[in-house]
Image (cartoon, rainbow, N blue to C red; front, side, top):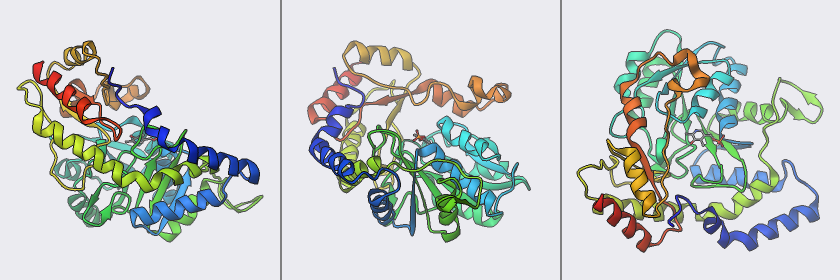
Length: 365
Ligand SMILES: *Cc1c(COP(=O)(O)O)cnc(C)c1O
């Protein structure tokens, strides 16, 4: 059986280092906002090339806290519109809603699955104040075009970089293109903790200070509260585990790219559409997503050959029960993507034999 993602194998090489970190934490008796969090914030900011990184509890909170902070700072008002891709993971949309802002869905580019600059312009109204650029499956959005649109309409640009740790154009990495970015270190992400974890990155001093305050009850000095904050701190232990893994992120992203390149060059089947991608650093292949008109049949065929696949995602946000107010809306590109996509196994611990085997089976379909 080839697993979709083998988290045991991914974390096995670090077991000894993780135990050492746990022992150190037990010996020290300090579990919240300590040296490990500070070190991770410093190192991840340096990795992304940004001035500030603020550790938070998860990726959803990272995005929510960015928007809430902009409201506290007076840069956004409750009810302002935020443009969001219609085909994103629902967390992107929930973050906007939890901050009291109004998400406005736009169709993605059918080839890259990412925000389509032409569709954005059509949805801008006088109430539009921000754009949420989701780097879906690990591929950077067309940030040059998106930032151009944002500048001419005075919009904030927030990146949802939860799937794009390390994706870059030249020296510029995800998390450094927009005004701020939210990252997730959910165990299955390219940089994954052993539980929930997240971070905000930004070059904006005022935003960084506000996120830092809001994540900790709106408090800078213990028991003195300046804002109505939340409890969304990055765990000291999770930060310690992330500190162990961060130095390997680039190597692991390269391993993902090598697998992706093999799939792209060797999968050859008229019934399968391969993902659109330019060979450069701008994709870290959090997912390798193919499309086919017979998705469920192909998934069953792979399963019968002991190959596990997943669907990211089976139901678009506007068709979810939770968003019933949008169920009547129609986004044909988004809906087609959700009907046709299938994510193949891709991870730094897969062997060349496994990748070749999956490719062979796909070519026999
Ligand atoms: C994982 C993910 C999130 C949310 O991260 P959590 O840590 O699970 O809260 C947000 N957006 C996207 C695109 C994601 O993939």
